[in-house]
Amino acid sequence: MEKKERRIINEMRSIGRDLFLRGLVGSHSGNMSVLVDEEIYITRTKSMLGRLKREDIVRVPLVKLTEEVLKIASSEISVHLSIYKNTDAKAILHAHPPYAVILSLISEEIEVNPCDYEGKLILGSFHILSTEGLSKEERAERIAFSLQKSKAVVEKGHGSFAKGDSLEEAYMYTTSLESSSFFQYHLETLVKRRGR
Image (spheres, rainbow, N blue to C red):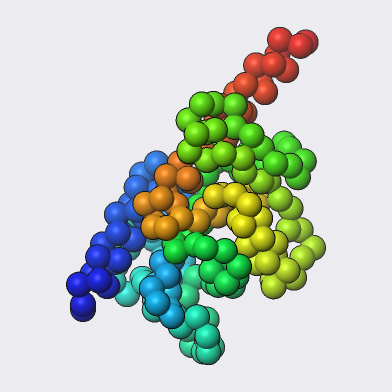
């Protein structure tokens, strides 16, 4: 294994472990990828991000995908490929942050401006979008086009996608998104209670 590949795999393991420990993914949920030249390193479908092994990371060419690769790579591979095709992303992280998902369920499809200082500074605005009724290709494009305007997006009732120049940066946007969603949820709850 070459030095660059070892570094990528170690970073994926580290970020995967952090995601699991922070409760941002379940035992077998979430996925991530890194773009290197004309291929991506992506987590295997149903892998445990908190306990990634070398065989849980698949190398996938950006073109000429085989059925064999599609069977073992993450089920979100079409979204990852669309994001790489349509944005400047070098790394992608898909998580299921609880407060972001809750916020998506109680909000309409909107652009959210974080109420907290750190969220505004690090993340800026993010979108909540619905992909219900869309084909696999339309869903992938919808998420990718939303990430042209923001660093992270929340798919209604499902989870978040964040892009970055590195996995660490995508992780920073994911945690910032969850913190901002936590504050937003509790702020809206307090406002509603006081309005009774």
